[in-house]
Length: 587
Image (tube, rainbow, N blue to C red):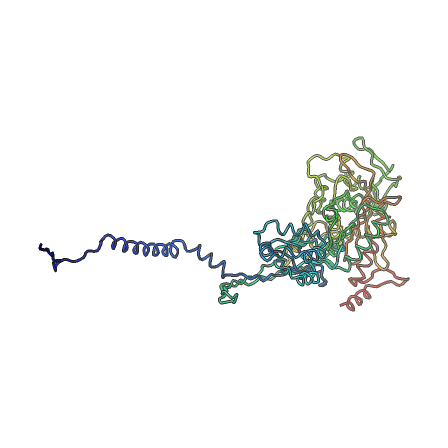
């Protein structure tokens, strides 16, 4: 049997499955193209996401906070300053990750020092475990912050902040105002000039490596320093006025009171106080109405303090002279069914007598003798019915009706301060206008400097001659009628006012006692207005409750400002040359 052996041809070669090769090559190319596409997408089309992720891991921003600017009085005494404090905050995620919430004794110690309930404190921190920031306590003292630091609770951190402190306390609270916990002004000067006082924080962006070291400074924004505000207030006069007002409000059991002191030449407000006041450093449990600056927000019928404007209007029109005599007999008259009267029949009175006796009949006859438009315009020109230009928040323009029809009884009552309402600040500006020769100036809470443009708002509203004549009449009012307003060593002029408080559609049984005055008469420097609101008891007239406060405030202010006396002292007459010598010595 033979075996047949088949030999492989030399030309035969083993074949590779071709499709496998192409699949492998295709996969490699696909992966490569995918990587290229992804790279192009990331780097060209959508690079921001990874940049953001990278920045979150390496880019840091460090802020350089700028403390709030200071508020000072005209002599540089600080009224509001920023003091360094620290805020306690928690990182809930870190607290839980480090099991810090199990440190019961430490949390109890933290709660005790903050005067908080430990259960409420821990529940507030652990309420949302994913949060990275929760306030524990804002603006704590350095000693408390140091105690918290020594507790070494993981996740409990401290952050530097600043807190507003008011050295003058309740004395200047209504002028300066206060800030909230975020250092934003919400009352008084703090609010009006918040932008100037705030400034802008600085920032530095840098990149760090894995070990937390700075490797690159990316961006630096320099801080913008805040401005310091220099007020027109003289804190010495402010403190004196507040002391006297607070004592009077308490003594007469009044609801409230206000005192305003102005420089008649510049329009600067040297003092503006209210009682009751509040402590801006601790406002807890303080009634909201106490925050109101009554000297600019509250308005009253000014009563007889408005009579000088009626007499001055008659002099301005020219139908009377300073020595003219007005017959007020029989001491009363009826206008439109209503009675206008004096306490008694004063008969024939000079213009000075009308102010000294505070004659309603005298001012009514003067008002009715004037053209209605001329007379009413004088009230608006004097500044009633408009604000005083301070720019303070909440300032009222009072009430001065601008209408075409006025009855005779309305004009008559207007002549002695009824049917018009003014703030203490408006009244102070009117008396300042008389004192500086008939020139009305905008009042300012800022110290007078060339940069303060509001001091350029000046308008002549009365003639200098007539203003001086009214000034002399006001001096006789004090000398003959208001002994309580006399200031030893100085010639003083002023006018009392006592008015019923207006209610809805009628008058109530409460009074407002006022006194507005000027000194020294020979060379006026200051105007002072005192308002005692709703005094209780037997004393309620302006000459009884407000004039004594005026006397003490005016005397102290003149002494503090080194204003030379202009009156007989102990039988010795102060001559004009002596006054000039005294002024030179003061300089």
